[in-house]
Image (cartoon, rainbow, N blue to C red; front, side, top):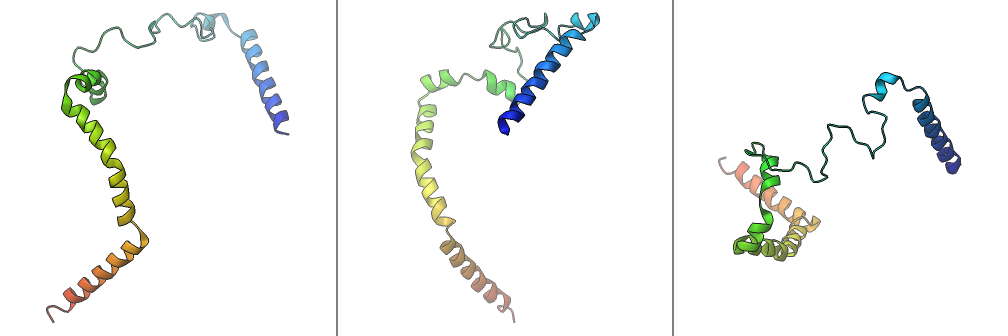
Length: 126
């Protein structure tokens, strides 16, 4: 059943591609819309990495992040390296503490503590 559906979808896309080639008006052929991926439009970027030079003034935050010299700082600044090591080393400890503090038994315990505090404050000024 599923293979029949896939065959019919494939046949429809194959037929629609043929129809597009047959019904293509001469004006649209000048727009480079129907060309293959091997022939990009004239205004497309030639290099796959992006622009050939960085922005002179990266105004946006994403442009600043893209141009930041991460590798240089990691190789030449010991604090950046140690920060990365510390994050990796502390992550299991933080996960353990988070798991303990969010356990159902701990939540019940703190709910009881808050209920007692609320009762004391409710009758404190009576």
